Image (tube, helix red, strand yellow):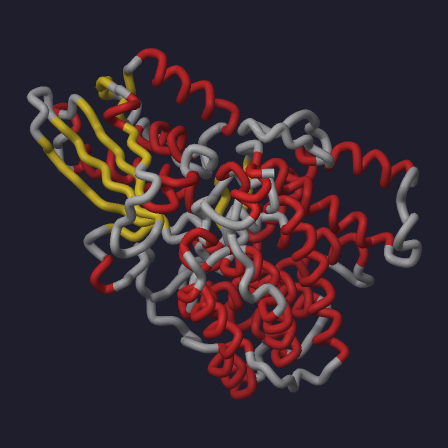
Length: 460
C-alpha cells in the first residue's frame, strides 16, 4: 500500500475528516459512479444510511450536509465552506436535490438521510450505504463505503483485501516499521525527510513536491489567520464561545501575557495557534487534515512555533517538517489507525502529536534516531486517550486538547534532542500498544458520545 504525503495531508472542510470530508467524498464517488454506469438519468431518489459512529455523532459533525453536497458533486477541497449549511437547508426545505449538479431528484430527509445511532457495519465503525432508486422505487445501484479516518475512503470492492483506494506504487525505500525506516537511513546516510522525498518523487517532481507542501502550509497559515479574526459562538447548540481572537489581542497588547509563564511566552502563542485552527474547524471552515480534522491544530501550531520562535528557521525546514511528519503518519496509518471511531482520540491527537514532534525534530537538524524518539515520546504520553465529544461536536474537549498536544509535541522534540536517540521504548512498540489499547477500549469511548465527558457534562 503506497500512500503519498498528499494523501495524508489534504485540504478539506470542518468539522471532521472522518465524518465530513470522508462522507462527502464517498457521496461524490457514488454520484459519479451512477454517471459512469449511465444510470444518472434514471435516478429518481438516493437514500444514504449512516452507521456506527457516523450515525451516532454524524449530525453534530456535519455528516448530513456533507453527504448532500457530495451527491450534488462538491468536493471537500474545492467547496466553499460558506455554502455548506445554507445549501443543505435549501435541499431540506425544497425537497429537491441536484444529483451531480444536473439531475434533479426528490429528497425527503426522514427516508433519504438516515442516522443509525446504535447499528454498525462489520468492517469499520464509520460505515455508510448509498442506494439509488428509479421512479418506480426499484434499486438501480447500491454501494457501501467506510470512512476510515483522515478523509480516506474504503469501498466495498476493496474491503476484503483491506486496501485503501490509493494508487499502488513500488516505493524506492519501502518500510513497514520504524526500525526498518531507521535501518534504511543508516544504510543510505539519508535523513527521514530525504527518504520520504525520494518516495514522493514517484508521483511528483521535487519542484512540485515543494510547491504543494508550501501550498498546504499556506492553507494552515490562512486558517490561523481566520481563527484569530473570527469571533462569536460556535455552531451546534453548546454555545461555546470562540476565544482565539480575544487571546490574540491580549498577546499583542501583552495585557495578560506571561503572568504565569514569564520565561515561556511562546507557550501562549502555541496555544493560540492551535485554538485558532480548531475553532475554524469546529465552525466548518477550510482546514488541512493533519492527519485528521479533529487533530488539525497540532501540526500547524508546532509549525508556527518553528517558524516564529526557532532560530535559523527557514522554508527548507518547513519542507523537512512535512516530510518527516508524514513518514511517521504513514506508520500509524498502516500499523494502527488514525480514526477516533476505531481506536479513540489517541489515534487522532496522539498520532498528530507524534508527527508534529518528529517534524519539529527533523526541521531543527535531529538525527533519524532522535526523530524516531521524538515521535515515540509524543505518542507514548497520549496512550489511552478517549474520544468523547460532548454533544457529538468537535468542541469540548477537542479544541483545548489540540493545544495541549501541541505543547506536548514541542516538549517531546526537546527531550529527544537532549538525548542521543537511544531510548527504552521503541516507536514500533508504542504504535502496537496504541492499536491494542484501541481494540480494548469500550465503544462508548470511541467517537459515539455515549461515554466520558460526553455524558457526564450533559448530566451535570
